Length: 116
Image 1 (cartoon, one colour):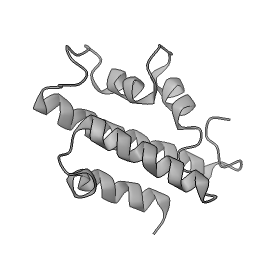
Image 2 (tube, helix red, strand yellow):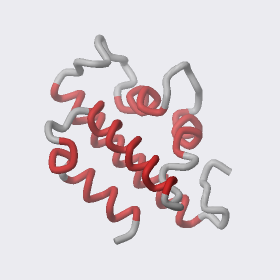
Image 3 (cartoon, rainbow, N blue to C red):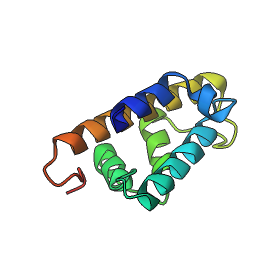
Image 4 (tube, rainbow, N blue to C red):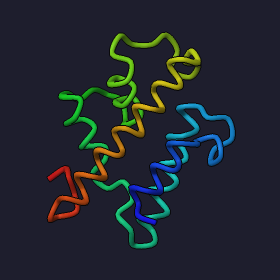
């Protein structure tokens, strides 16, 4: 299974991987996935934070999860730890759409890093 296929599987049924599918649980899972992949010689999410900033078109003091929320919820949010259920679901959907774009670009890139 390719990395793109794996991430698509997680995106289709995040609750199978993290229990209750919250944006924070999914981003924590992806951070662990990234660390494991890199530790074992895989690319993990190398270049992802830079790609998300470039995709958004600007930076801020948030890490990549906050950058994704800015894209998914451009009108902002009241409490980053307690998103309304519809916002939570939408943010997770956007996250996996962005990940698919990122991995697709990386696969097409000769350097393997779409942030270059």
